[in-house]
Length: 64
Image 1: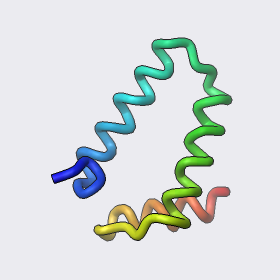
Image 2: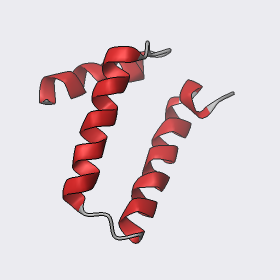
Image 3: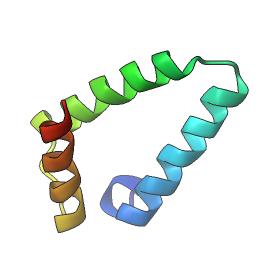
């Protein structure tokens, strides 16, 4: 099973990457910009395989 097929694994993966970026000195503004860009791409281009992902995509679209 890929990390993209399991919501909890996906959240853990993203959290790990966020911690890594912060530890390497990436600014909060840069992290926010990247998260917005990646989230927008996923919401528009990737069909979620579960309801949590669909809900997260809808939430992201409303917040942008």
